[in-house]
Length: 333
Image (tube, rainbow, N blue to C red; front, side, top):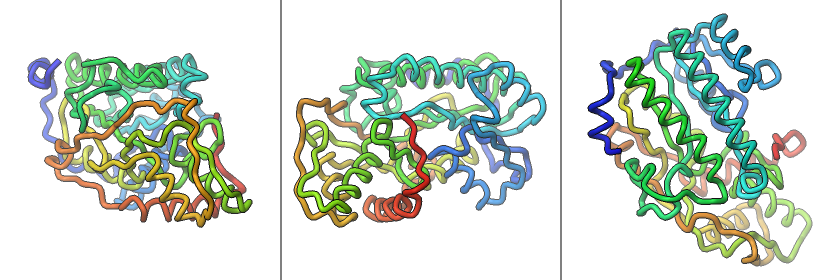
């Protein structure tokens, strides 16, 4: 479905402008990688009434609890950053969890936000929503034009459902809600679990442990040839606020750097940053995933935002954060 057709059905009559910094703002998933970065960004930008709940305080899969929360708190603005996320191993092993948990979280939060009058809402998805073999760099209109990457299709379907629910709410109820699709994210607060993490934090942990142990080799999954784009989570948070202040439309917006590297190149860079002196081997018996995943970020640039944090600069700060928090890491399968 083209943007023209979606725009023709869109009922929203809203001119995007800077959000009221005193309005109540709920960040769903405020302790996670993305949510915590958004919280920091909102605080630094003068938002004075931020609301967050841990998963122990509010299970977003519990529909009655979510509705009770929205009724009590009455936020005017929401960022939906809460999600069950993981790397290739986790997605391949637990597809039911990734589909069911994310669908329930999204439907509960979006339905409750609709009922209790949330004005501005940003839904966060993932670049895995796009077809496995989409033309590169991937434009927003590539959505639903081909087969998904099978190693994370369940998660992707859940996120696609979220985008379509945002579009449906705009058409049916005229709410100025929007969606953003970030590329691969990294930074402080990431999940460094050996079995549940994404590629970059997994590599940081692996090379850091190898460097400490004086290991002569590190073995990574796949061939090292796939190309990936990486965005520091603080840049992502800045982009989210920029979109809330300046963008309104039914089409999801890609958020990335517009540059990619091979997995082999990122592994070499991480090895150098942590001080690993050995060699890297590749186990081609394990899957590579999508051959290339680079986002076209021209729409975001047109809206007025581009990434600031360089990859090596971001990696050095992330490695330092990992070292500073090595005894209290967020391990999620």
